[in-house]
Image 1 (cartoon, rainbow, N blue to C red):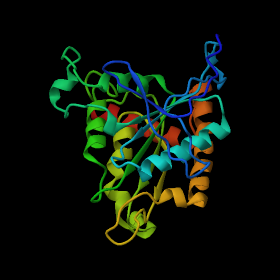
Image 2 (tube, one colour):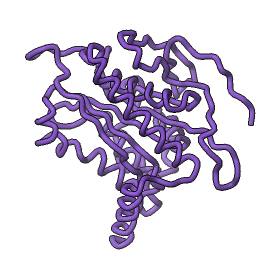
Image 3 (cartoon, helix red, strand yellow):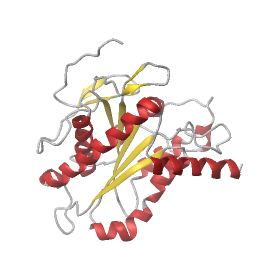
Image 4 (tube, helix red, strand yellow):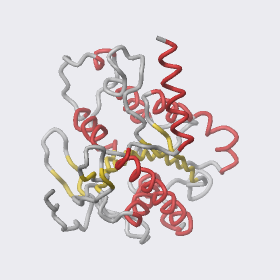
Length: 278
């Protein structure tokens, strides 16, 4: 296996899927916990695959935050920094959904022969290639932004079998990060339920949700919105620790295809229910 280029970029790079061009994206510099990359060209020996070949651990982050700077993006960076702390040579990619073009879902997107003129093929390719996926999103009006819901709908074109009756992600690990203006009590009492469709969609597609984190009170004050997480080093450190734990689980999945026992049971339960429903 050839060694990849070991040069780090000072700023993240956003890829335009339609042209393949790369452009520099400014990073936040308020905390050392934040990872300063979108696309990192490093490889890691995550383990030996079943065929006896070296496995490179690859993780993709999808960020739904629309604002700049963004609390959900800041939270994602801290989580990714934890992954890099666990395994510095992991291949980590981050896509800001606000920077890509996605047609609104309709049944035509289930037709593999239908022409596609947006950025979805590039996102699909990356989601298929990686071993783990992180989704970071704000919670607006009890749910996630429309473009994240649209992406989940579009995922049905490749994350389900041909009959659209069974998930096809083979247990791929996911982690969910949420930010919101409400306190933790509101998350536990209500918002966790109103956003549960994100995790349930992933499980329906055959993926595994290894954890979720909600960071509340992400406002500057009553009716005042803006970046606050850059001033919470303890919170970012805690999220980075969760990223390291996730990296360990994905490392195992990349090497062996095995998941934590709880998620293994959930994946098998979903497969059983979907098989029975046919």
